[in-house]
Image (cartoon, rainbow, N blue to C red; front, side, top):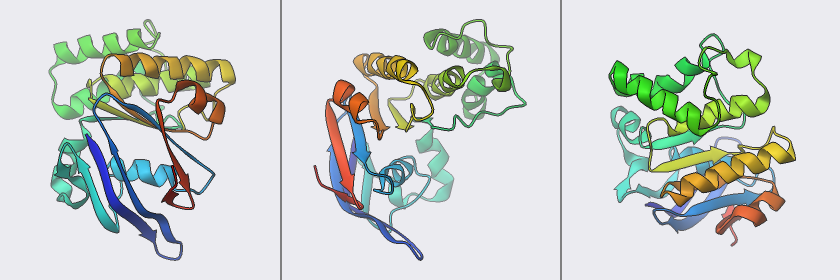
Length: 217
């Protein structure tokens, strides 16, 4: 489903953040990316999400070299990815319902289907009844659940999560990771960046470990 082939990412003044990284993820896998701060974990995820382009090498998503796609085609590919961020990235002057429904509206879903999917996603993450709340009234764990609902509302085949438990306490972190495992068990491919070795050891089927931009195991 996803393949990195000798991918290098460089930034002016910073040199190579990723160096010749190659790996393959099959459909339905749950894979963690680990490594020290600055190892290139988030850069790898941003490249997968088409938020950045590789300096060298190829990134193949379902056989398509997405690293060389024209800009106009990127939104159509990104719709098949669910993105979850450590800092939630919710729109604070919109309700929980509006935050979750936004990807559907952008994709052109009609009102009835949008309502059905939005409520189903909120129910899945345990936030039924929160539709009219605003993000500022929610706890950190609840905000992260809104972000997860937004990521799954389009029913993407692959979810990318960047330190999704980084701002949560250990109990909430376990709840979130258990939810990710449930998604994976119904066929969703998961690629999760995490520095929490205890969580990685408990939940990971496979780990991509980065050191100074290189994949070492």
